[in-house]
Image (cartoon, rainbow over all chains, first blue to last red; front, side, top):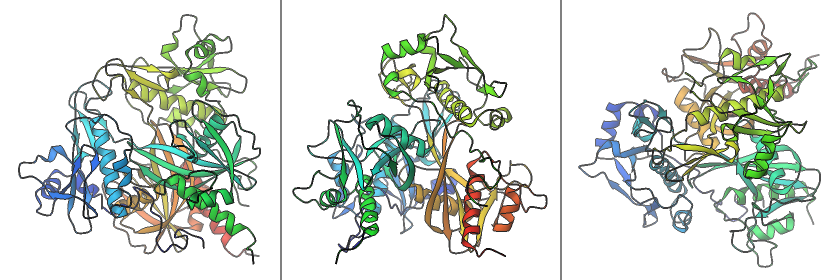
Length: 308
Length: 308
């Protein structure tokens, strides 16, 4: 069995992808339409505790907007399939951290995938607002505009847009094996694809080659794009790729990578299946690294001679 | 003739891609190594006028660092193939605009491609510094750290990293034709792929589908990644894709798109060849849109029955 459902009957969910909101760009930039959406009896706010999700009965909690709410304090995430305008309230206080928490990661599987995506978009956007109250150009205060999809400086008028930080996450492949590494802080036995932020002045493919060389000392080429995932901690765009290595000798950057090794198809299969005795603990199913490994493995199986 | 050289003997250059600097991450984060690179007799600064390139004899002008230079005023772009540490001096004053200029676009073709990439990286990085002198979290002053690859707030200590803004640029394809549009401000007759910024909370593929629907009212699916390009005006990462449309009816967002139409392979061929009588004026060869159209056309020609 190949393909995205692995014969289990249910597709494995890629976390934070698969949003179903219509982002209604024309409403964001039209104050009258925005006011109408905000005043609609259908309007809802997604209930959060700080940046954390609130779940009841297998769904994110959505509430009508409070009667005394100000539209300036809310971001319009979009309009859902029931024509409900969905808002998220901007945070009054910055949280201690923007990193993933057990509760925000655990949402995957607790609520339908498109609600996880809605939460992720809200989390990224609210995280950005609370870190951008001041203008990076002149230091004065900014205020949200365009239904929370940008902020403008009250002094120099500079407009600032939400960040999306592209990250490459990739497998180097060498003779039927793929390179996996682990960071010092990870749970024991956990290995995953190497990853790093794309920098100004490089293509995705160049970023993949640079990161694998920096972290593992391996030269690669022939980069293939596989898939992408929004990662709302706070606002990464994970871009998953596979590159070809001509040599398997490793020289690790020990600040970044505690250990790395080349895993074969059987080891990857066992790890993704969560088998005891697998050579490593796979990344969580909701992470794009899991799906990248699955994609690679499916290609290995498809490319091999079937056994009788 | 297919492939990247189109039989002309010389590959068409994708602007700002193909950098050859080693970005030397270990030097950026080590003050002693950075001081050594800065003091090296091999060290050079790329000479700019504001954000504009300076060319002599078919190369970017590189000069030894002035004797009284401060390392804090420079960003280390990387080390070149002659082991020269290459720096760019941070700007004292913000330019009027960060958009592309005839001079910065015209660099492609004037100097080797890897120098265009070096310039693009410098331009993006310097543009980011001059727009981020203040902390977006607390409004106080920031200062460059890590050899110019981040800035830190002197007050709240928040660290800020250079932006890279992912943009999807894409063709919708329908029965052997591709959708092209033009913006109001473009030169007469110029058409190109639709494009837009990726937003928080969506995959690349979701961004492609959203943008085509928003701008042209066309529903698409089956998005394929083709290639990417850094675009230093000021710091976009262009991600080129092709999506499949089931219907060719158009409903344009007239704020964004002045006109759009479906071009067939012969029209695209004539436009890329710059023929008189072509149905549209193609985007410049240095832009990823040109290469995306070429990629699509090569697939059309390869997929059709060759004529005798």
